[in-house]
Length: 113
Image 1 (cartoon, rainbow, N blue to C red):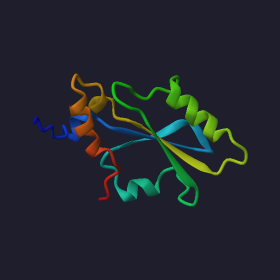
Image 2: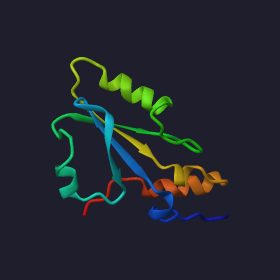
Image 3: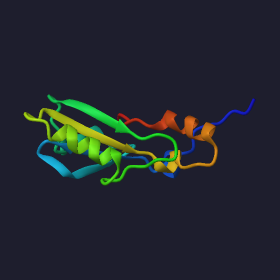
């Protein structure tokens, strides 16, 4: 049996796009190793629910694809009481081997520094 290990986060280049009701089109773009202090300076309301939208194997985030459309629909609800984070892990999802992509999902989280 072949074992696959996650590729380094620098190679995967995971990006977290943070949107809010006040900022639905110009996201704050966060890397995988964002610090707690950096989070405090964002347009993020911790009292609101946060919805994460994550694509699958061989896909990626773009404003004009299904992820952007879903984000827009969520944030257009009235009254708007949500944060939305779209996760783009294209560096880890657009690989030749599906099992490598599965292994790469182990790294997709916001780390706590």
